[in-house]
Length: 230
Image 1: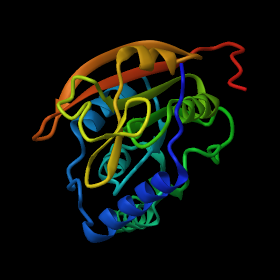
Image 2: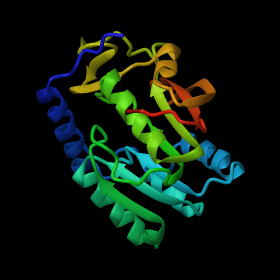
Image 3: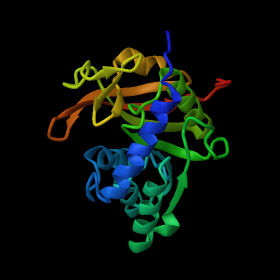
Image 4: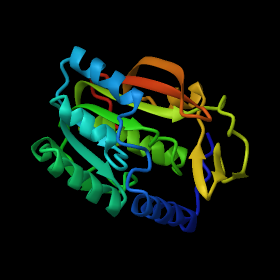
């Protein structure tokens, strides 16, 4: 598979745009948790998973819901403003002991020890302005920090989405579709390609929002064994 990198200027532009959005709109995605988060909580409780890593926490609407349901959450976002908002919300709601907010760019190694987490949750992080090679690195890092049998649960916009193929192609299936934001669209083959070291438990399609967005929900389980991402 050929991976076409996005130039640094475009990547930096994405950071600045998200920083500005979170600064100008403190509740860009609302206060209510996503339906995906609520379904994930049911699954994690059923599987007796307690310590969770959330990647791309945004303004914390799902983070807060995880904490309210008794989960310990280490939440990562690469925007300074997003992390500030999550810290404020966790203090205001008396949940600071359950939430550890960390500003971090997931293109770099995750700042956690091996086999730390029971589960990793990310809602549309995978479909940000990230190349396939960067996504494989992120998935390998998730594998590293998950305990054996840990779950990697994420969503991505897929190629059935009405926005797919519109706007400016930035390489691979990355499209700059609205207000300068870049989206990486997925098919099931790409999900399978990125799932080495994991058992694919489920891939199912659902819709979200007014447009609506068409997404895949992906559930992966870390395989016990000697898989080495390196």
